[in-house]
Image (cartoon, rainbow, N blue to C red; front, side, top):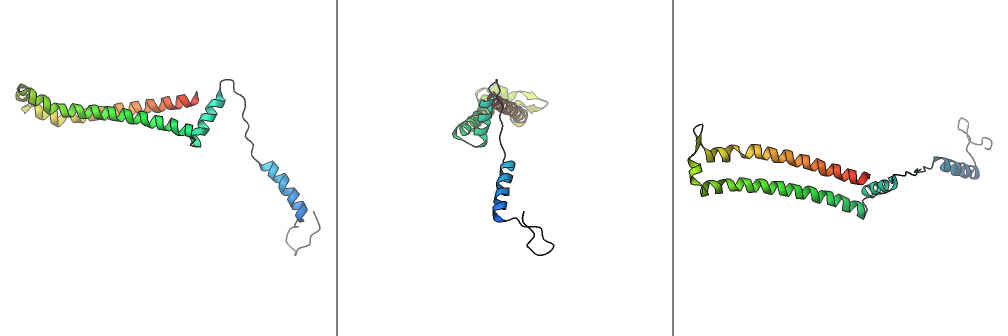
Length: 146
């Protein structure tokens, strides 16, 4: 460093050449390096897949799109099945009129089935969808980690 040439109370200012040399040394020391150790189990492929997901490359987008498509297919199948079951109830009572005459606890069976059956059915379908969605996500994570 050079002698103090500025006003009193201020630190010494390095000359431009010294400052540039100091910055280049500092930049080399502070530069981050990524060190990846070789993993015999194929960890490099997993890392590459995770990077593709994070950077949203075309491969990462396809993986995410496949997960979403699987989730959508499951939702549509369960929703369609539920809708079909609920829509068939009135049809069953229309085609089998003797079922409409059955009474339980003073209430006719069609009213009980149409008034009470949808609630446990929808709860069960929701529970099944949550379990299947978690399984799909677990399978997705497992396929990425392989």
